[in-house]
Each structure stands twice: as structure tokens, then as C-alpha cells.
Amino acid sequence: MYRTHTCGSLTKENVGTTVSLAGWVNRRRDHGGLIFIDLRDREGIVQAVFNPEISPAALKIAEQLRSEYVITLTGEVAKRPAGTENPRIPTGDVEVIVKEVEILNTSNTPPFYINEEIDVDENVRLKYRYLDLRRQRMKENLQLRHRVTKYMHDFLDARGFTEVETPTFIKSTPEGARDYLVPSRLHPGSFYALPQSPQQIKQLLMVGGLEKYYQLARCYRDEDLRADRQPEHTQLDVEMSFVTQEDVLQLLEELYFSLARAVKPDLKVIRPFPRLTYADVILRYASDKPDLRYGLEIADITNIAARTDFAVFKNAIASGGVVRVLAAPGCGEYSRHQLDELNQLAVSAGAKGLLTISLGSPGDKLSALSQEMIKSVAAKYLTLEQVKSIAKACGANPGDLLLIVAGEPDKIYPALDALRREIARRFNLADPSILNFAFIIDFPLIVLNRETGKWEAANNPFTHPKDEDISLLDTAPEKVHGKNYDLICNGMELGSGSIRIHRSELQKKILRILGYDDERIKLLFGHMLEAFDFGAPPHGGFGMGIDRTIMVLSGEQNIRDVVAFPKNQSAMDTMLGAPSPAAEEQLTELRLRLLEEE
Image 1 (cartoon, one colour):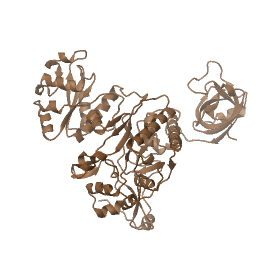
Image 2 (cartoon, one colour; image 1 turned 180 degrees about the horizontal axis):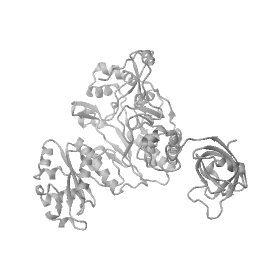
Image 3 (tube, rainbow, N blue to C red; image 1 turned 45 degrees about the vertical axis):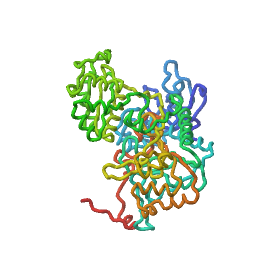
Image 4 (cartoon, rainbow, N blue to C red; image 1 turned 90 degrees about the vertical axis):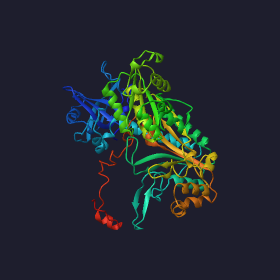
């Protein structure tokens, strides 16, 4: 037997007990005669003492031990001498007096410290991920992930849901991102696609009468990566029959509220989750996933800007653009360098530039603001009353800094969102002890791609339009809203869902608006449409990102820190060396030939 107890389980109650432990050497200290080893396993750390008066043989082996050696030992649990207790660890009141020890495996010197939470180059961490997983932070994140998914299983099982595994090899259909394609050896020239989500399959399960389905589904999207995105991810996939949008939102709110209370009881969860419209959050926060833990609301000042003599405003408005403002509290005395940083941030996020207006000194009243107190390159083009009106619109006070961006809404919203997040970061406005969930509803169903001039599905082509908007599909598609919704928390989209179309004629109508002719509709979606004609029930559901959920609950800022074996920023697995070239015989068997790069 390698062990009778885990390292982290020993307490004063075990004093006098003989135990066997196994784990890794976390740290070794030689005190000239006595050797102390901090032994680590998954459950924690305990101090082991090697004393020549107790076991000279064990001490001799202890002299060989180094960090990350794997050992097993047997000894008696003793109370630590007074004054040597370690309150930082649960086992800090006891130690193990070693009688026997065996080296199970030695270790090379690790490329980074495992027993210290220090910054390590991420590429090194990912190359040696099996070592990184030994670190306390990663271990806690994976254990949290386990508790979260177990809770979800139990929650849905208790409510009558059936877990169903759906295929990994499916048909490639347009769903918003590039598919990963898998060539078929048995059908040369044909390809499977890895699912971006089980969207169509779960709808067919509803046609099949399952009524309540869920699974923790693996999903694959060939997209550019970022801090909250991986090429493969796991989502909680749920679908229900005979439900309204509110039915789905209530289930989702109950799940996430009770989940957070169960796995992170120290965090404050604000309930009920507000329902905010897409139009409202875009106007107030310039984002459909705003962080609601702080204010910093954005104001529309297009009407005020139109009456000024500032050419930048007038040109933007004449081109169909808008003007928005955000107040940065207490930043009115920012230096030129600090203002340049904010301007560079806005430009990098898509804006043509950033106009700043400093509003005097803190403590003054807005009514006492004078022209001399205003600092801005546009000051001579704005009257005092216009500046006061702009300040009033966004709730600014003397001593604050006005951040103004003008241009096409789609171009300036990312810049305003980036500025809002940056100001919040600089002043620590986002309380880490709060989980502020919200539902975003009433999204546009169809949007016009200005570059191509074609209509595109804002979410996916299977979202049901709001009943009162269906008549607008023929005359004003851009005014149609969908029965779809997102769940956001602390500035991150955790997942989305919708009530689905369940009638073939309405589905065909949407697909035709999106530019599909009848032949292509039959080729790509014929199986769905045929199924709908066999009595498909009204249905809806959601897909929630497990990885992002763990990010929010753990407070991590990067999705790679909550996934056991992630890809790096270039979608590479540096540990396994993937992707890698295929052997020529494999390509020949699949009847594939690689094009030479020009």
C-alpha cells in the first residue's frame, strides 16, 4: 500500500497514528542533522521530518531527495513543537516523523518552479503542461470545473432531462464560423464537419419527442483565437419542447444562481437577473456583454454635436454616423502621455480618433464651469453651454475627463467599450466578489452586411422571429427581432440560445432572405425541413460555455487557464506538436494532394 492517508487530510486528531503517504517532494530543507520535506499530493501539503535518531536509513535516502521526486513514506503523526506551526496550510499543526521512505521516481530539474505561484512564460507552461497542472492554481481550476459540471448533471437530471451524446462527424452547414473538415477515406472527395454546436441535432431530438435533452458537448470552430476563445470548447447544450422564451430564461437563471451559490458561496450573486434589450445595452454600454458591476454609462450626444462648429462632428454625422461620450471620473488632469494612451486604445479598437475634454478641477460645481477651465483641442469650436450639455448628458463633473468618439456605430462601439473597460480597470471599479448576471434579449434577427450588401443571420438561421415582427420579414427585415437571448456575467458572454423555428415554411422564408435558393436550401437543410413536416413541436434551448463559466467563477482572465490541455494563441498544441504534417501515404489513402505555397 502506497498510502493510508492523503497529505492534506492530516490534523491534530491523527497525532500518534502511524500513516503512509505518497506524493511529490514540494520542498526540501536540510537543517544540519534534521531534514524537512514538504510532501505534496492532490489534497495538500504536509511536513515530513527525517531524524537520524529515529531512522538513520530514512535520513540517508532523504539526503538524495530533490524537488518533484516521487516518494512514499511511513511515519508517526506528531504535533509540531510550539512556535513552529504553519497557519498558512491546513496541516500546519502537525508533522510526520518518518520511519521508512522509498523513492518511486526521480525528476529532472523542472523548467519552472512548481511550488511557487510566479509568472511563467505561457509557451513554456503549455509545452510542459503536465508540470503546470501540478501547480495549485491549475489544480484548483480543474477541481472547480469538475464541481461545476457535476452540479449541472445533477441539476438537470433532477428536472427530468435526458443526456444524449450527439455525433462528432456531421454535415457542413453554415452556422457563423468556419468548420473543421474531416476527409472520408470511404467516400473520396467528401468530408465530414466537426460540429460548431449540436444545433440541428438537438432540434431533431425535439422532433423525435425527447422533450428534454442535455449534454456537455464538444464544439469546434475554426476562428481566430483570443483570451476567451479556443478552437475547441465544451458547452452545456440544452433543448426543451413546448417552452416559451421566459420558460428557458427562468431555468437558466435558477441553474446559474444555484450553481454559483453551491461552488462559490463566498461570491455575491445579484438576483433576479435583469432582462436588458440589445438596443438598450448598445446605447448605454456600447457592448452586448457589458460589465454591470460599475456604471460608466455612455451617452448619445449626436444632437448636441450637430449644433457645434466642430468639423469632425459634422462630417461624421453627415456620413450617417453618431457621436457618443463617456465620462472618466477624476481624470481631468491627465497628462499628454496619458491622453495619448487612451487615444491609441480607441484607434486600435477601430475608431478614427478620440476627442478628450478636461473639465476643470475637482470640487467645483458644473454650473460654475468657465471657458478657461476647459482643456481640449476642440475647445474653440464648442460653446461653454455645449460643453456643459455634453457633461450633463453623461453625468460628468468638474475634474472629470470627457471621452468622445464619432463615426459609424459599428466602428465606434468597440472603441467605446474598450475605453469603458480600461477606465474601470485603472480605478478597480469591478468588484471581484460580485457575480452580476443579466440576460440580453430582443436581438435583431437579420442584419445587413454593408461590405457584401447581403442579409445575414445575427445569431443563426434557426432562430424564431418575434411573433409580432413576422409580418415585417417581407418589407423591413432589419426591423425584425428574434426570440434569442444571451446570458452575460461581469463583461463576458457565457452562452446564448433561442426559441427555434419549427415550421418548414417559415424556415424556408428566413433562408431565402439570407440569399439561399431552393436548390441550396434542399442541399444544406433538406433533412431539417423534412423533419419539421412530420409534426415538430415548438422548442428552444441554449448552449452555455463551460470554459467561460469557469473563467467567471474562478476570476481567471484567460480561457487557457481553465482548460487542461489548451491550444496557444496560434491554435498550436506545443506539448504534442499539433497540428503536424500528414505522412504521404495517409494523404494518398485519402486521395488528397497539398497545394504548393506560392
